[in-house]
Length: 144
Image (cartoon, rainbow, N blue to C red; front, side, top):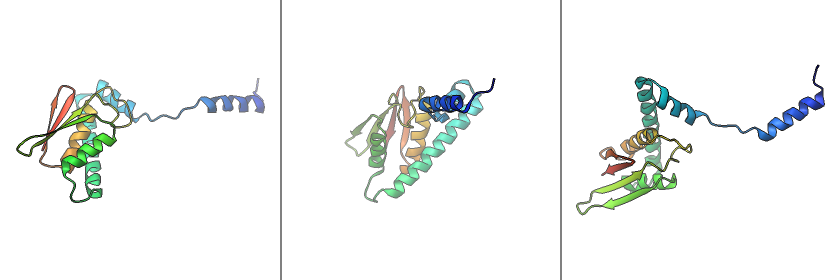
């Protein structure tokens, strides 16, 4: 039995009201991270790090020259909603601790910290080439 035009339109209307387009990029990354080969995982992390580096270069170009790299990085993380803590040492060393539990860095709630670590590391490399990034449990420490 063939559906009539009204029935077809009604079905499309119902579908249109419940349709929610979604970005599957985050799910793809997460599945590859969980189920992919070690080479695939390393490839994904390398790409994410490169994207972080490119974003860092763009951010550095937009900022006024008087802004310090630590201020650019800290500002970016705060605007992205990532929890940070800044410690100024007596000898001028600045340490920014990044909470990796704040998973909104990409606008997608990753359940793994590795993509965030790769992105932030690439970003820091672009903005402050000499800074050291180390991971301690669910935190990253950026030493300037």
